[in-house]
Image 1 (cartoon, one colour):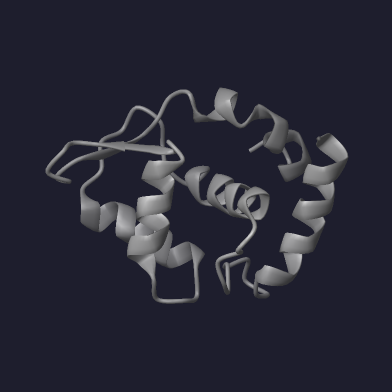
Image 2: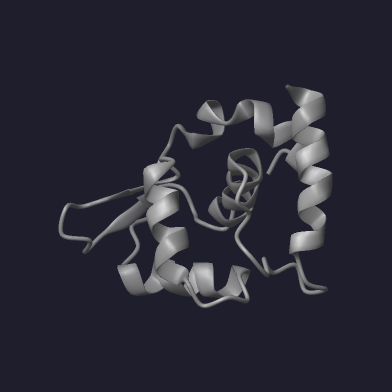
Length: 109
């Protein structure tokens, strides 16, 4: 899997602008996970965030306007946890273990 992840990671480089922001959301699951890992790395562990704060972190990492898609995907892939009403978000503590096979080719984050 590592070589495949490396290939996806390399291919994903063309999805970023010169400032390191994602310009489009990839359609392939492995590339999505790698892109989400890069965003999740910006979220501090053991800190609670409002939806507005999470949206701002995401906004700084992408150039396209679908912040809600990225937020939902981060929750679906268990990078983020949240209260049912969406009033609090946090980095899931286990995502680094869950996606360990993706982390090394992504620079370890």
